[in-house]
Structure formats: structure tokens, C-alpha cells
Length: 299
Image (cartoon, rainbow, N blue to C red; front, side, top):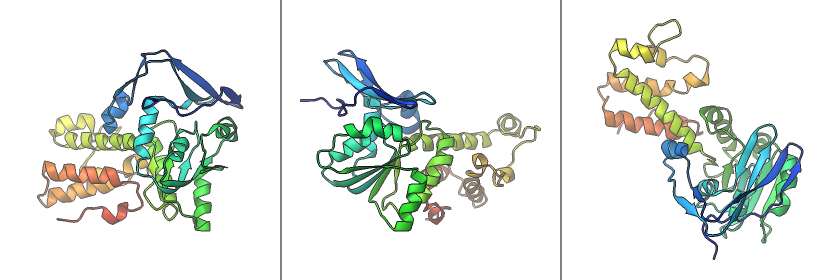
């Protein structure tokens, strides 16, 4: 009986263009983790230890230009398994990579069809022929995911679920530049809200950034100015926080600060109320439905 997180892929080493498949060999007893320190702190992912009593081989997708794209080691298996839980029907995958997500979904009896959109033909050549797909559920399409979503909207094609993983970095820049546009393009194409690789990690960064600013606001003016000031030394005021500056790094917070200021004026500025509003804001920002729930209505 195979242990949980045993590799389900069997892809030969190879190279196509700038992409290559590499094998990662580990000795018996080597300890893997199902989360990193980063994903534990920012997203609450649990770093469970995983050991195999025999040697094990995993895979790595590598690019000469950008380094490692992904592996199928336990940490990424755990992330995919948690993210893909509950999928059924027709599923859209953005990004083929090693094909782990597609292979995992192909094992799910509730999933009927899996359409994988991959922009790099070299990755398709390396990976697609080796996907475990006994029931013929998987179709791989070579296309740009952004364009593909626009095409499907025009063709009125609808998927039940979607999972997107076409980036390496899980920082805030990826959230603003890639995740948010994909969520917007998916409206009317995907029934359930698309799930994105490490989106919880990205939103965790948004949360901690705003939370830190809230804490700075509680400091005396002289202390606060050390942390919240413009390059010319002028202190950043609440009016500043509530005014757009034509940069997403600032402007994404403006609706929150406007609500925050209103809570102050109405005398509802309790820790519990602000924390509840902060969580709602960070969890919903960037979703197409955001404008319908923000600012939150009085209870």
C-alpha cells in the first residue's frame, strides 16, 4: 500500500527548449514537510512531517530563464490536495506544469472533464504524454490563459470549477497583476469562484500589511511619523490614506481606510469591529463580488 504523498507521476527526464524535467532522489527516511515557514505564517498551512521507508523519486520542472517552476514533493502535493478538494463536473486548469493537479483531478470520480491551458508548447511536450488518465478526462490546450478565458466567455462555455497556477512568486505583485485580472475574466466562465495557487499566502500578506498600519495609527504622532511619512518627511494623514495615488500598491487600501474613518466618526471603532472588517476586506478584495459587499452594512 502506497503511503500518502507518494508520487503519482512518472515523467522521464528530458529537455525541450528552455524547459527541463529533472528527477529528485531522496533516501529512505528523509523528512519532507507539507508546508514552509512562509506558508505557515501567512496562510496557516500546517507543516506535517512526511517520511518514506524506501528511497523515493520526485520531479522538478525547471526553466533556464526562471529556475524552478514546481515540484511534486509533499509540500506542493498538500497544497494542491487542499485547493482541489470538492471539485466536480467540468474543470478548467490554468497551467500544466508537471501535471500533478490534472492527475489528481483525473482520479476524482466526481470530475468529468479537465481542460488544461498551458502557454508553453515545450512544457506540453515534456509532460502531457505522461499524464495518468485512464478514463480520458484530460484535454490539454496550448494557449494564453487570459486570452482563453475571453474566448470562452464569447463562446458562452462554462466550467464548474477552475484552478490557476501560472506564476512562481506568491507575493503581492502577483496578486494584483495576475490573480485579480484572472478572477475578473473568470466571471461568467466559471461557476464557482476560481481557486489560485497560494492565494491564501498572498492575502495573508495583505492582511498583515494593513494590520501593521492600523497598529501604527495608535502610536503618538511623533512615533507614528517614523513609520508613516512621505519621502519629504510629512506625516501620512488619514486624509492621505483615503485618497488614491494612482498606484495599486496604495489604492487597493483606500476603500478600507474610508470605511475605517467612518467607523471612527460613528463611534464604532472597537478592536472587534475593525478586525472583522479587516478580515472581510482582505478575503473579498479582488473578487468580482467585492463591490456588492463593501463597505459592510450595519448589523
